[in-house]
Image (cartoon, rainbow, N blue to C red; front, side):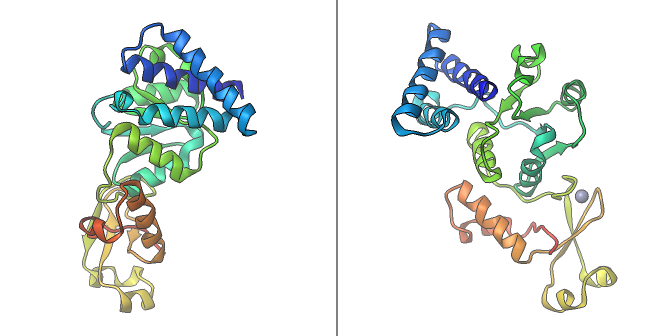
Amino acid sequence: MSRIRRGYEDRFRALLRQARARRLEEGVQWLVAKARRLSARDGISLADALAQVYERLAARQSFQCSTSGTAPSRFLCDAGLGGLARWLRAAGYEAAWRPDIDDDELLREARGMGATILTTDAMLMERRLLRDRIIPVFWLPPTLSIPEQLALVFREFGLAVRGPRCMTCGGELHRVGKEALRERIPPKTYRWLDEFFVCGRCDKLFWHGTHWQRIMVTLSALEGRSVEATGKHRHSKQVQE
Ligand SMILES: [Zn+2]
């Protein structure tokens, strides 16, 4: 729990700094105390109470601008965020992820790539390179589901859903005539669908079936729009059945 609390303390600090609050540390401790009271009053976990306090604070006008001001060009997800990386790619963003990466490598790679680190590890946030904002980083509470993580990242950086990238490697998808792919497409799918895409980086084949539709529904919800409203994205498909 102390790690989660520490992560929220960092987030409170960032929000308060953004709003140019004075007496930063007092503000942070006041917010943590508020979460403790909420937790006791409503019988919810401290993690949930901290999340609520954070949500309310972040929703207030003066706290709404993103920490970075502009959308990061690419993300580097820590070892525990492989699912989020896949979804970010589906939403059209470059998101690197390696399951076995250690902290030093993660920092080195982020710096080399010019990437923003996404992490659930509050201890990592103590690293000087991150504390001093030399490498941009965003901490996510480890208690969140993947769609919740995605929604948080979208809100924090003011992202919009783009044409999808390969969920496996993040490469760009290219539309390819189905005749050329005949041997790779299951016969039934070949008969029913006309649009197929190949990843320019890992050569994986994609088309949009029911799995893709489910992904679109989740991504659309991020923007508070219906699936129909995201029609402009439908031409950059995704996802192998
Ligand atoms: Zn790929």
